[in-house]
Amino acid sequence: MVRALSDSELFEAWERGFELESAQRPLAFLQAVYPDTEEEELLQWSIGRCNADLVSLRQGRFGSQMEGVVSCPKCGQTLELTFSTAEICAEQQENTDHGLTVSKGDYRLWFRLPTAQDLADAARLRDHASARTRMLEACLMEAKRNDEKCSLEELPETAVTAMVKKMEEADTQGSVLRELSCPECDHQWQTTFDIGAFLWTETDAWARRMLRDVHTLASAYGWQEEKILKMTPRRRQFYLDMVNE
Ligand SMILES: [Zn+2]
Image (cartoon, rainbow, N blue to C red):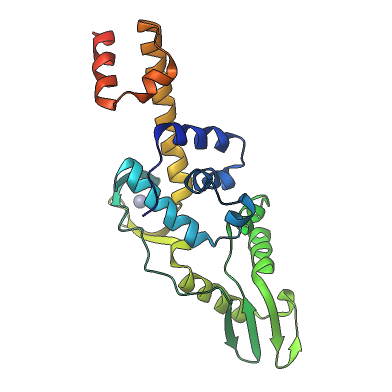
């Protein structure tokens, strides 16, 4: 369980997030949790490790119940989802510090797990195919056909698929799949849950709500922002109710 962030730490993370591209925003939360860790180092963490901390942060800050909406890809019906942080917490991942290997036919591949940096680099590319290639190139350390070295382009798709599968197994928290079914048309599909994007949207809504409350109380009583933010939520709400009466 990571340390819970205070209101002012969460505000700082929110403000820093605005300066980042959307794929990198989760980094602002990790920087707030680990202020003594260099950004360079955080970027080398596997996506699964980052996500596990973000889930933990979310639980400590906003509770374990999560709500969201998705649209059915077949009929467009909007579905409301409720799930818990426990459901999106994957099992402990295996130790992958020394990289991973996979063999497929004559091919043998050595690779590492995708990191937050890889994700940020891939996100800059517009189309899905080039983003995937970029990510795989970064992670593939060496590939051999029998004893001869070969590049990513020379690998058969079956070998690449085996590598991706092994990555997913090793970094379970990297991509959390959920099975969904539409009550309207019975269509069933899988969707990946992006804790980073979810937490950003939620924090953004929280920050805007807080600032509106500060505005209301500062206008009514002339109090400083700092003083208002330091109040317990209960006391702040009490004053807000009186202003709004
Ligand atoms: Zn549907």
